[in-house]
Amino acid sequence: METKPQSYKDLHVWKKGIELAKIVYKVSANFPAEEKIGLIAQLRRAVVSIPSNLAEGQARRTTGEFVQFISNAEGSLAEADTQLILSVELGLCRLGDVTHAHQIIADLQKMLNALRRKLVSRD
Image 1 (cartoon, rainbow, N blue to C red):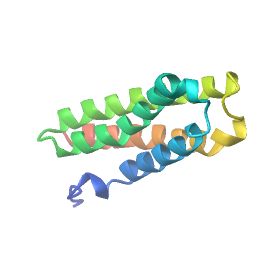
Image 2 (cartoon, rainbow, N blue to C red; image 1 turned 90 degrees about the horizontal axis):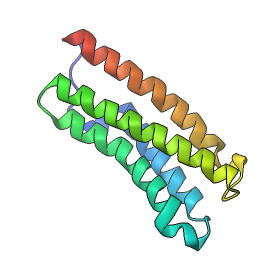
Image 3 (cartoon, rainbow, N blue to C red; image 1 turned 90 degrees about the vertical axis):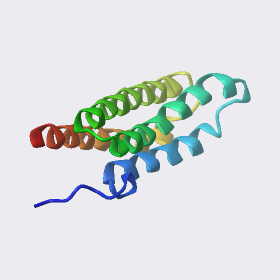
């Protein structure tokens, strides 16, 4: 029988979210200064929200609450993906600068979906 992770830090999906946040922080550091309170702040909030929601959800007492926080993380992931696409289209960065981030986003989408299915099937 599989045991529940002792901490959110044990979740591979949380670790992947941290990895995405670090990449986005590095990429957005090169955006123009006038984007500091605009796209930079919004993009960074979105990527920080992904592992944060997973941490909070894993710490909750019920599976239903955890599933809700996974949904929140998925929403933040979609937001970050959209903002990265917009960053490229606005010329704030090159597609090559965010290719790895887009790969991690695709992985996270699959991981979050799998985690939700696993949790729901346990109930």
